[in-house]
Length: 179
Ligand SMILES: Cc1cc2nc3c(=O)[nH]c(=O)nc-3n(C[C@H](O)[C@H](O)[C@H](O)COP(=O)(O)O)c2cc1C
Image (cartoon, helix red, strand yellow):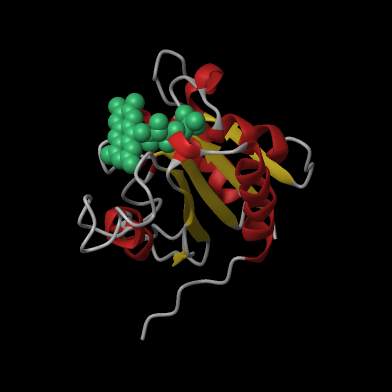
């Protein structure tokens, strides 16, 4: 199983959570780490290179901080430009078929806030539906997400535990089965 983690954080230098996760990922030589804002400071995505990266891996994790219930904009641009007709979908568009896709996210909001009765009203599963739906559209398999919430109340211990759990998740995630 070849795993690619696409990290999208516009200011990783000031990040606590994503930077800690990234630092840990780099210790694992069997996991490919690809930082979008570092690869494309001008936000000019090399589509062919990105497609080759996807083709070379079986499991792809999109790691990012939640921005306005969505992702930092460069990840949206990545979806818009990389998942092309004839490559990811459409006639002969089968390069993503059978690959696994999932999200690893950090949120300011607490776990309780991301509930129907909480201040954010919607669950993280619901907020991540665009990635789940996209995965389905490109014939991939959607993985359960990994999340760290309430990051403004984050002890070093909770961050360390989440970092260890994240690596376990990346290695052991089992696809979400559709009932
Ligand atoms: C532009 C912007 C929008 C944000 N939108 C949300 C949001 O919709 N929900 C949320 O829980 N946190 C939101 N946040 C907080 C970030 O998710 C949080 O700062 C980040 O997960 C912390 O991770 P880091 O330590 O790696 O930077 C937002 C932050 C920024 C800068």
